[in-house]
Image (tube, rainbow, N blue to C red):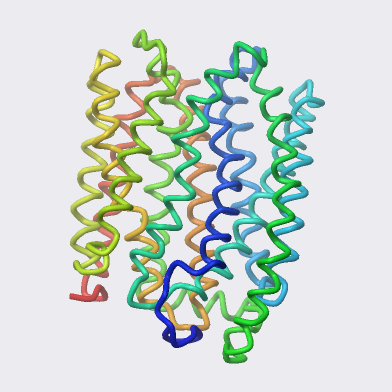
Length: 398
């Protein structure tokens, strides 16, 4: 591997696969909350407060990510992953005890803390395992594991809900999985220690605040962060509010939308991984940002569930190309010692989108905007992102 990596160019190492699986578990704890808005609405929580509570978990991750990123290094990454897994398990169990808004606020904050610790540590270690010439494929495979929960959990939860009685009981049932995942860290730790022997000292150090500032000043970094923020703001609104939109259109199984979307995304990642590293990233991003804007507009105009479900495949394909290209572009332009930091800043932008999407949607719904109207308004965000990508198009490899 180039830079801090070893000479071998294998992407699918044991360590890479195990880290991807841990990321899969981390995003399972996000995807199982696809119906959280419906649960809060059924509990009588006002629309604005629903937006706040949905946003609070990603806002916590958003607020803490820069701080957390400055004390993670390859040496302490495994310990931080373990701490994150424990906090996530306790948070999932805590939803059963949170009977009013005050306690829900506390649980959502703890939930965000556990998530940011786990995922920040995973990505910081993972970027040191990806060969430079396979960054698009590497991030494609990794994000397959982060998206797979969105295909599996929504339909599974729809089947479990009649048996469980409420979403909260399913959250509690999921908590032990995160404690069991601690066992995966033992073999991972021993194998990573052997890998780190060959890394230069620069790659092993903890990135400080000055490194973060240096990363933000590097050409292309800020525009990519803004685009990532806009994309996740738009896609998070789809994730949290599509179920309600489909139910109002008369859909009998809204969870099918998420399955179709994720299947399309997974097929793109599996069969087009090598293609992603052979094309100009800037032009690909411009094309798919435009298509994302059109997708959201089409969701707004669709008046029957079957049409929305059909568009789910197109939307999933767009997301499948768009998100790994954003991360790979950031990976390509970042100096070796800032790859982990800048990749975590991309997660910081993701957190911001997860926070801002439902917050804005909650405010707009409270002001009387329809669910269809939300999709039209949020279509402006990827269109805005096209201007940022155009400004840095010359940084992309031909």
